[in-house]
Length: 257
Image (tube, rainbow, N blue to C red; front, side, top):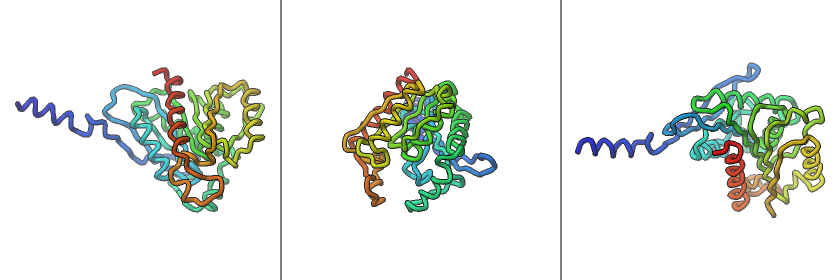
């Protein structure tokens, strides 16, 4: 009887249930203190794929942490990078634009993404040969730049990203598969910009795919997007659900699980 009771208690323990471990991870980039966020399921044995998460222009906030935890619940080791330093976040669009502007369009964007990737690979349980990166808005642009930089990553998934194009001299460096999850009515990426982006990836010989969600605008994955009060920025539940599923299919192909 005691053995049966012990077995039941073990099955009901947080570890057996797969309760996530989540924690802030302090690290540095070029002498600047950064605060990342790690999530994983300690009940899973052996090595598994790792996924880097890069936040929107608001900084590494609750939304980015929730996405990191969702990936951990799917069986990945997930690490969210801090792209601004010090764990800075904001809800003010002007401040967010200022913070993003210090990184976007500069070498810092790819460099800090690469540092986040290195931190992910350093985590226990990560199979270093199976890593991917995802990002939202600003973070979506960052993972594209990560791919363009020639980083050793299996693939990147960019949700409602700013569609930057690779420089011609970077074409031979792009080894990562690229998935772009895009809202058809995103005012940040008008049709001519989308077409130029697609042509640039073809010219680079990249392995890429784009899924476009009809009627979706910018930030369609974030349930809090409507609170911002910006034209062309809104949550779309169907596009959010479908894009997350498309990311999962992409990962299944990348990691051949």
